[in-house]
Length: 556
Image (cartoon, rainbow, N blue to C red):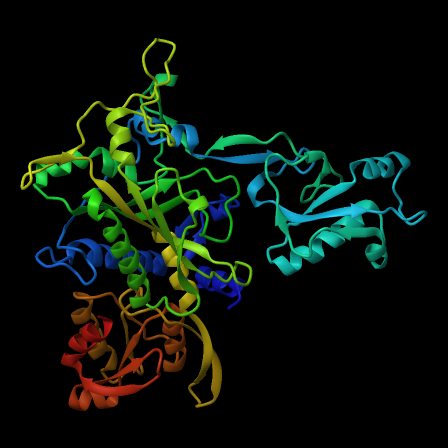
């Protein structure tokens, strides 16, 4: 599937629009259209239903060590600044960026990829001035950054750009360059920037000194703009759950093990948002913080890892494009003893690459202990307090007791946390990519033509059924409208009587509607309607008053 086809469909049919498009758009922000908002809401509803409201608290689900409880929260986007100091976001939540002094563009240095090359300037072949030729000879090794998306295109792009900048004819490239690698590689902040040719630059050494860039959006609380009034838009929803841990314990009387779920907006000031909605500055998360006894925490980690993977496969993300990948030891966060990513092979990624859909992390007791005691050193674990100008600790914790007393054993401990954290926007994008399909189907005249169809699982499809009178006369619209009003009270259905029935089928196929209900002349005689399946194109007749039951059963 070509990504540009999906992007065009999303705009044409009202799944996704660029934010503030009439003013040129705002990079990293996206608006969900009429179909997109229904799709995303259905995904969030399915997640909440399957993880929280539909959870059976009386019996352990398959694979769970024991039964457990689930509850929910909806926390504020702006929280006390001390939350982010104790969580580590204030000090550690940053990327390393560089600017190009020539092109005025900004880059995350860990995303700059290209190839190292040694140059042998041929006599008389290069149009370089003597001082530039001398500089190339002095630098020796040069790094050519590519702006191409795929690895194959990036390799070719590095050759093209090197020839352009150094004034070498393309056919002489083999004689002029010695490439150190046949594949593109990355660089880091320690690289000699004088050797780097940045994207869109015309010479080497245009990058600025690398600097850390905190990804949190800052704002002011109250009328007075001062450091004391500074606050942040949350970069994740998890911390709201941790700081409310004691409130949930006291108000609901839940017992460990239990989980707290939340769906909400988060904000990260990404340096280079990219790949449609995959990396945005405003996004929505679906997170669970699952609290359990330290002795059973690894079993719970395995359980949530497998359960979350099954949720995606049950909704249609299956096959080679979905995988569960366990992190290597050098990838783990300092507080984690285990992390697994559920990943999807998005079409905009290079062949063989996967993008993260959801992370399942074993966070230990890091978060609750940090909010109790203050910022913790990730290596030695003792309390580390920075002193402010007023002589008071800058990174002090709340001082509240966030431990748990087991009433059955009378033992107190700090629970361990398992965190399944999913992106609602990334999940929506993955389901869009997986659903897009082109196949052959007969038109009104019976001729086979290519159709675009979005094969959403019926549970998440934006529209569950379309009600279509065959013609706009002979009482068919009246019967169709009556059926539409009956179904509309129970699920999202769509009424359409414009153009031929074949064109209406095509429109619903593009919208991902799993079922079409057609009212024709026979319907007026015997009260039956035709039900059409989007994927198989199979059609069958049933009583009109059975349509709701039939659709409900097939949606589930």
